Image 1 (cartoon, rainbow, N blue to C red):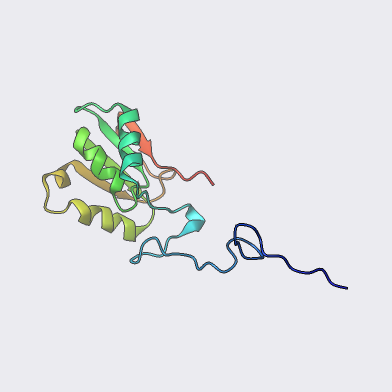
Image 2 (image 1 turned 180 degrees about the vertical axis):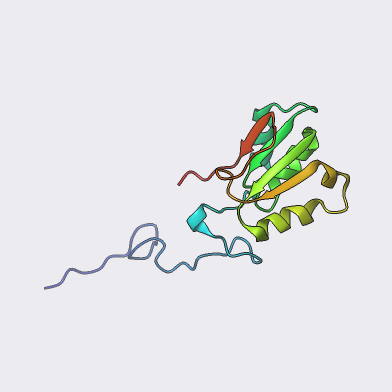
Length: 134
């Protein structure tokens, strides 16, 4: 005789917890390339905490690895003299450039397209990155 199925106490369905969930597109414009660890930093509190921990000075030239859509970049530009952002994805490089276009910060942002490991980097004082941990 087969076992009777019981309802779980918390009302959870049977099977894997994420079996029926559809992956949510965190960004409707871009499909993230997770093969290169691409992700977007959305939480402004986390972005501000990263900048605060870097203890930036007004005279600092900052190298940002993987600026993505520019959420962290904008916070860095508030504190630093210049930001050199190295982005592998041309779509994201265009997005971060567009984010500061027409603003005074645009003069202090330099976007380099390519792999940061293979790119000849100019002089910088501080390196900041929201690196994926996978």
